[in-house]
Image 1: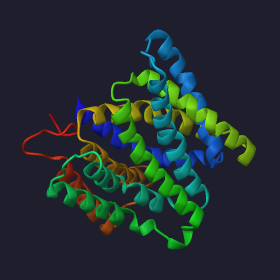
Image 2: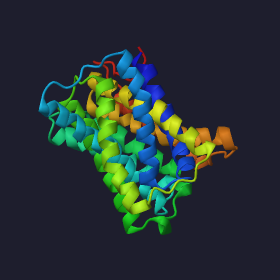
Image 3: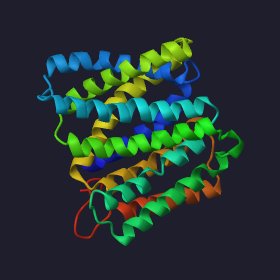
Length: 293
């Protein structure tokens, strides 16, 4: 079961790069994200009415869910989307955000007292090198401005802190309740930005609506909850190492849908990334929550 959740997360997160690119052609980042989370709340409404969630019981529990949600959804997605809106290529953004496992390894070893084996350190470094090889042909340093670089660095910090924060302070939160709270909090922050900064300009199209539906149902709801379930059952660095794989999957999906065949360096990078992930998640004494059972 854990293996299926892991691979579902990888596939959807990778496909999300394509869906996001389509959506941003019809609406600027804060407006697109506002529509995304409004639709997300509409999808969740019948779910919570039929299957009653366990809502937070204390004020601190509410606050922890809100903080984790703002970091995971509003800050992370807002930063990465706006970086691409300012001209950063998808390859550069993917490469920077793919540093999350390395950042997570440093955080959990330094402040959360999770001991990492030398093999795991080698794995996260190999994985990052593999992602670099996969996206290298897309990188144009002239596209990296100070604003777009700041956006992706903010996104990197937010997704790293968010996963660890929810694991630390809301490890047993009801995932349906968490999704509602976090979508609502993100929407409350993003709508004012969309109105004041972007004037909520939308070029309505079926492609944009399809992108929103995919990103809400399969990514924001199902994939994020799959990630949190895996985080509850495994070490933070091992689960975060999966973040290497979505950019690789995006390259494979691009080849399948648009006939863009990866270059030889990209294929080598895919193999290197898989080796890095294997080194990070595999243990002789303990079967990883994202390994096959």
